[in-house]
Image (cartoon, rainbow, N blue to C red; front, side, top):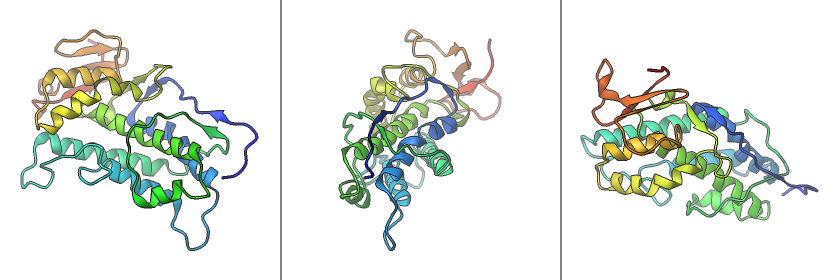
Length: 248
């Protein structure tokens, strides 16, 4: 790892983001890992490709690194919930791919990232434990993975997840970390194959309107309204919610 005379703690900029904008905002975490690792030697695998493979495995539906296993993903007729989660994972991976190299890495960036149990694909593990790396780079990579994983989980409530305006203003828990409050309960229901409307409603509030009380049929916040998708014209889902950039 290149020497640095002064470390700079990562500071997430609180504000409003679409999912694509959020992925670009946190891209500095991964880009800083790349910069601090230094150039790959001739013949070595590309570091970015290794870390992106790790993200793909983390967002996957099966395997050791999967953060949200889906039992029926390979069924002839997977559930609506499973198909929806797979679409979200594919879109988020695409956003992350688009952000590669889009922002400069910081050779002195650091972050304190509590261990969240993310498993690395073996090539990423070898790279992050090599003499090129350090505990700082492990935490930067883990934070990037965790922020993206929490984003995926927070978007499950929305059928038009790509359009949702996120309101990420918690200075104590930057980015998508507030999802930790409901993530365990959400994933437990997904593992059983059924998620309640109440759980999806409370999940939808976490990254958009965290100050609203529990309960309700839908909700309005500063950046739009969220209602059952079935209320909108067209073939709206009976399970999910829909974001609309309007005010009632």
